[in-house]
Image (cartoon, rainbow, N blue to C red; front, side, top):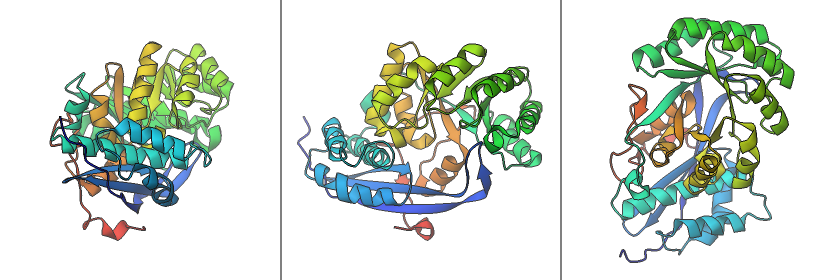
Length: 365
């Protein structure tokens, strides 16, 4: 039995990375992405976790989470997770607090696996050797040439047989262009690759049904957030009206959120960098399985690959352009999605090492 080893004070940093081109989806636009990174040491090992969230999340980790985890046994991750959830009761867990908990929890799981000198996938117990991924980007700001180049790179370059683009442009006010871009995407990827769309809640209920029926003609099999993810009744109505799978879950910050959403979707999406880390991600996956649903990991593929390999009801992991670009810049040990799968068995813990010096230019905290 491994002796107890105490958690030391986390080191928290934040980095803001410019996008490689202007980006937008159906309801939001951005030109930078901020990542908050938490490094936690115990004994002779250090674990790393992160979340894509505002810089203020770094202060939240320092002020509210650090006092309740320092000195705890690094092997007892669920106990630390519970202490963090209790600590943010008056702050409010959804949103920034959940992102902060997520980064710390991911770091703690990475730390535990490193202390035990195991890959995280072996510590948790693998259900599969390979994790399917899908290429994700296709922002509404891309012109057709840019869109085609990105899709070509995934499908014909890396042989990823499933891809997703953004629709719902300008809160659903450009539906004709949405359909045109989907048509272009299908022409580029060919008839065999799976084609997904994400409206980011940009459509109204009946508009989503009308657009969804047209998209089905181009073989779209995945319609993410056709309406707001807060409109559970609307999600259910769109799901029941269309043949494609209707999915959501990107903004889930706790387990009760996913419990409420399950009756309204065909596949539950869960983001470990938002929902409360790997601890809560595993719970959400089990909840989905209990209701006969698969789970899909959203964003941050290098945070998800190991845990995704450990659940039997996994559909896939999102190979999201922004996060892949940042994680490949920031970490040694980045995964290769060639062939449409990743294999998270390399190294110890998450198998990643932060390139602190190389990314210093992006540091803001």
